[in-house]
Image 1 (spheres, rainbow, N blue to C red):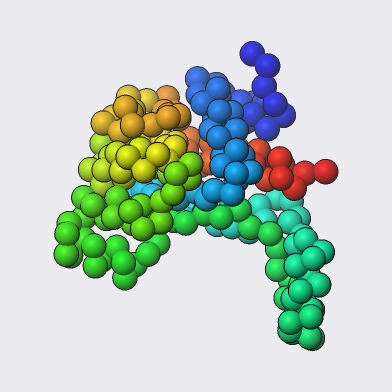
Image 2: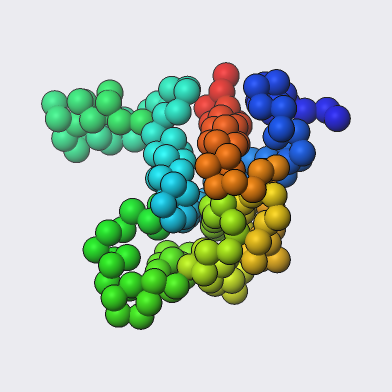
Length: 213
């Protein structure tokens, strides 16, 4: 199997992930196309998977391993607009890959949970945020969390693409995923241990595409 350097290194460090390496490569390609077409990525999860969703959003929204300098034209506009303050902004800010962690909207998620139910907490946000050809990255170790499954269904109804990260069985969300990265474990903690390197590989591949030299 021919693999790129990112996934080759991933397999060397985590041999178990060889079973899902094609899915990881396909997910990276889908993310690259999404960003190339002006789309954005939304992520959701519960508990430890919520933390993974927030982690991934952070790696996409600021530099992960490579520098992401702003375009010269934007730097010039910042300096023209803000003077000395604009120069500080131009030198400090960096390019971002748009990502929203739906799990992080505390006031909104509690309002939705209280008013219409926790099972709809992510699906409702997609109604507001989601556009055709955006991506939902749905993370659930079991693949059976009701609010994650509902988010996947809603994303597909909005003509979004869905990348799922689960344990080996895939669970109830499996039919709604365009790409499923179902790592070969069943125990929650062990699934999460394999989700993180997969997430880093996705972020690394996308960042290299847009900012690698």
